[in-house]
Length: 268
Image (cartoon, rainbow, N blue to C red):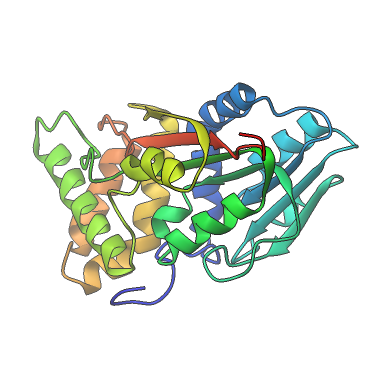
């Protein structure tokens, strides 16, 4: 996966749960809006790939009801146990290397997964193959290269430091094989995969309390790597975390690009 093996933001680290909660607060409403758009309904069979936290699987469980199925998979299910409630099956699965789980599915969804997966092309093919004819794929991934600043209004030293640390974080991601311009490619990739009715949109919040929570957890999770690579000093990291805690930074996230498409029926 590049210079270092493995996922930079390891689910086994203590900050992972905090990050999942913040990501849910920031992006769940947008994700659920896309589910509504494709018509997720009672009885649907859904595969949530790279589930991370439990919130999306829980929403799907409520929507599909007792006659539906929700499968939640991740390469590391450390934080997924809370998703294993009635109606949700949890399975350890490497979306880039393992065969798709038994389907077919009415919905396959992945959020902030493929941008980090070195075998992202194979993963996307597998998700498409797992759809029933007429089933929907919804893929949501960040595009840090499209908007690389965590403080778009870079008006002072604290904002400049925040963006310096974000640049270091992006460098660490690239070393691990992340494609920082992947989100923008999703509409084309879904069309090339043979899906019909492909559409996409983008969303990123600015100045949300959850942005502060996410940034604190992310920096704490990678601070040792930032220092080891010479991308920041401990003093700079402490100064940045203090500015975040004081609420002096208008933080944002990378744009989340959501794309969706339908597997054509045989007669199409």
